[in-house]
Image (cartoon, rainbow, N blue to C red; front, side, top):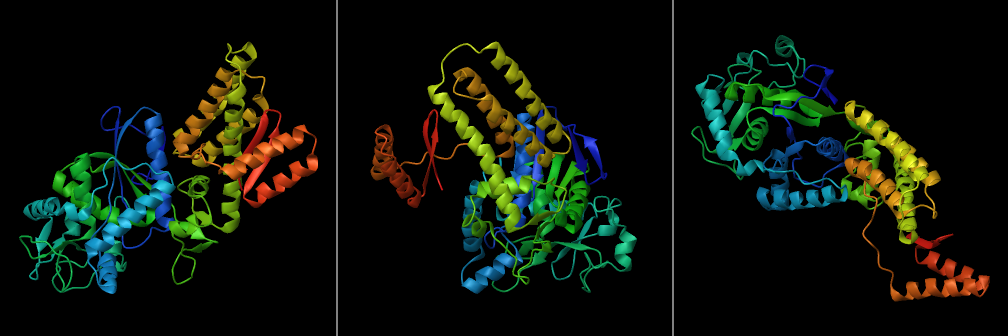
Length: 468
């Protein structure tokens, strides 16, 4: 299995720190509002990476945090006349609802920054002790960026170029030794949440939070650190500087970053009015469609969100689900017999599509090509499954499709929907009308059911129905 390592800028064979185990950290959202579709992309992408690692037999310890102390959260609390804790807890709950809708598996651990303050104070103290950090007169603690010799190795930025003109991490202030030094701890402001520390009452800088949570739940050295490409600099660059200076070992072997999401070929922003939350998308589409759409492109390729592309994703997903429903329908009346030689041969042939899927995913998690392999399997199923097949054969075909869809996080079976008595009676009445050759009444009932959002499909194996 090969993955693209941002650190080396090339694809590398994946070799875990500890055989059979994967330690993976993914930067989670800052919870001051409903998550937007830009937040959804890394969630879906790295949930799929985790699922594939588990499919390959790895024991994955997957940690993804919630940033629950931040300027945006504090501003939202002030605006609402409530506390930062109330705002963050509310939107963590809402975020989990959206994640569930996108079929994202809960992390092994979802740490909260506010619950790990002691660890942050401890790591900052160690950095001061080692000479990598210093407290200023006002109690702010800064990291000595130039002291870390490898600074810039992830973003491939030259520190002298940053000094010469880049503003990415410059913060003006008389108290800093160097304009490039960044904040580890900052003094409280009126009305803000704060914690006691040896330097001042205050709160941590953003970067130190992830370094500490990763260390606590995964250890000093991890396998994969991931997030959106907007986090490469300065967030992930600063994490490396902090963690490696404090712990004395390489922080993460592999760094994975997903590309940006655009809306109708423009960058998503509130000012352009093209900003969509996952909750808003869920009002128009099943969030399975959003997941399928996100996986239809390679994670390192920019992805364009549009109504046309979402409709295409909806139709593609429908093809897969319909094929699964067809097999399940055939299974109900299939014979419990030994597989025929022809069926054994067909199953062997169908394995080629699973092999194709694995080849795609082994090549830097190419979900776009993986989905193509699933579509090929769907086409095979549609032409090689009928009422004449044995139950064992149909079960094996379904299991093959479900296995691949499970890796992608695609659900093949929705929760069973219960028809009310009126609709059940109408379906039964229509069947009776057809037997009596009263086709006018049968058509009338079909139209009536359609008005109620029930689509009927007459097959050789009986009547199938689905919600419109």
